[in-house]
Image (cartoon, rainbow, N blue to C red):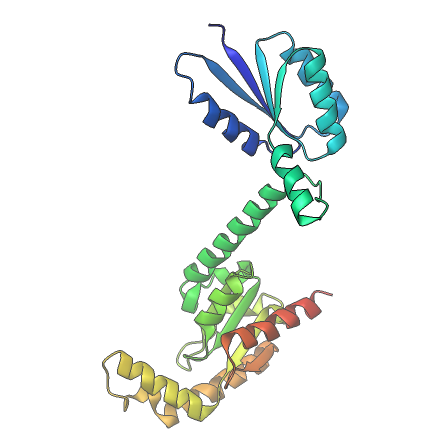
Length: 269
C-alpha cells in the first residue's frame, strides 16, 4: 500500500491535530503513514500552498482552524482536489456553542497560552525553592521580589504563594551576626519587601517551632532579648534599604501577599 502523508494543519502550533492523527493511525497496523505538522496557517495563501503540495501525493488533512472563513476555505479546496480532510474542532465546538449560548473567541493558540502560563508557574515555584532562606544570594538579582526579615516572619510561605502568582521570589533572613548580602544594594528598593512581626507573636511562634523540633522553648532563639535584638537590627537594615515594610502580625499569608501584589502593581505603573 502506498504511504499516506497526513498533514496536521493548525493556525497555532498544531500539537492537537498531530496528536489526534497519531492516535488514529495506531489503529492501522498494515498501512504506512507519515504525519507532517503544518503550523501557523493564518491565511488563504498558506492553504493554497498546502493543497498544491498535498494534491501531488497520497495525502490526508487533519486540521484545527478556529477562524471560520479559513476552515470553510480549506474544506472547499480539499474537496475540489479530492483530498480527504477532517475538521477536528468544529464537531465539538458547534454543539457547545448551541448548549452554552456563547460565542467562541476564535483566537488561535489559546491552549498553548495556557501551557505557557502553567510552565511559568512551575518555573517560579522552582525559583522560590532554589533561593529560599538565602541559600544562594545570586537569586536576588534575578528575582521579581525579594523578601527580607527575621526568622518566622512568613518569608517562605509568602515566597511559595507569590510563586503561584507567577512571581520569582527570593527571601533573605536578617540575622544580626551576618551582614545583609551586597546584592540587595544593587536592585531597586521597589523590589524589596521587609517583613516584621509583633514581639509577643514572634516569641510565641518561635517557642512553638522549638517544641515541634523537640527542643526546649527556653532556647535563646525564642528569648525576648534575642527577639528584640533581631527586630531592632532588621529595622535598621530595612531603613538602609529604603524598602516597603509590612507588619505580618495577625495577617494570613494571602492577606500579606495581596498587599505585596498591589504594591508591585502600583510600582509598575
